[in-house]
Length: 70
Image (cartoon, rainbow, N blue to C red):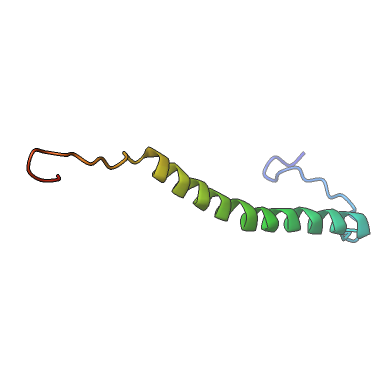
């Protein structure tokens, strides 16, 4: 046995297969859901962020002094 070369097994592979109809449909469905989620969740996160900022902000108060309003 020749130890200077690595042992290599060459398998006989057939022609590479492409995706049939069903996997393409699933792939398109997953991509469509992902794109739809971007258009739904990003504006939703923006709106919820604004609501959170409004709720966190301290309410303004009107102080009445003896001679003027502060």
